[in-house]
Length: 324
Image (cartoon, rainbow, N blue to C red; front, side, top):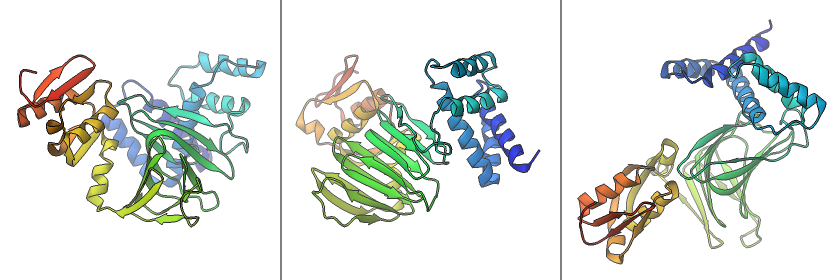
């Protein structure tokens, strides 16, 4: 067996083991060590993981060849390395349009529900982390790597490829990179971009901004609100706080209670409702679990003596304290 074939075989083993119900922290440490040992390990693992995920999303077969492949897929154990190999064959045979095999790749949709985060491994080695209530479309071709952010927020760790730039379309904004780490958030036509590592080019596609693109470097944050662009530098700590959602947390610094409620409402089906202007203007700070809206309400009650009333799908907060 060649070295490359051996790496592919080991990557398939890891993908199968990672999908098991008994996966442990010790297993994760072993996988991390194997991935860090060589770039070829990481690429092989991410490619097979992506094929595995996409093969599971296939609809009912539309041809005899698809039917045969699907029967093979169904009869193999779910965690078998050979099922992964069958998935690879199936993906090619049914024209999934993988980046490494097709110039006519279809857009693939990914999305998260409210309060849910997910990480998607793309065939080129790029990883995309989706924040709460986020929806994207992905297209990977030989000459084009592109993501459309339809709503929500994503963090991208883009695999470097100087001959094949990676672009993100968010509303009227196009972000172009070669290889870097950055986040993009979209609320309607309002867009914000934060660069953690490397640099990106920001182009406005609406014709309302100057024709010259904006080049953003590490720790730069750009925001487009009501068609107006603003770019500012952040400290590493400020940027880390803004991206604390990647760890399931909200870092609130000098925000009003009204602004904090808006943040929590992004992550929870149960909504915070501030019923009076005085309570809404209270300035708070701290780091919180993004999905523990009840715990946040209790802290507000205890810390500021406010009334907190839980009515199922809403928590009402006002200026006079009673029981929670």
